[in-house]
Length: 125
Image (cartoon, rainbow, N blue to C red):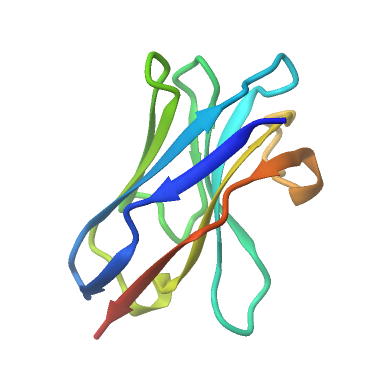
């Protein structure tokens, strides 16, 4: 199983930026995607962004498109989420996840077998 550790969360004002990082270890052939999910208080966890492992294809939820950028450093086994123009509604616990998906526009949590512990992002107005 892949081990994932997130970092980089914090508190910022609206309009600010944060960069989340996810350190991965124990990759195996069953992983073809790295993704970020988030869960706000009282809400279900939602998919935010995904990147094809080893590739360049990136995917974003409409709510973050144009503001967030996902990237990876294969040599360091790191995945990043650069978050710009943050809004109060971006406040949530952010989770890094590794899984096997079809890249068909669906990102079911059941396809992600490895999760990090989460890092909190708080955006104040």
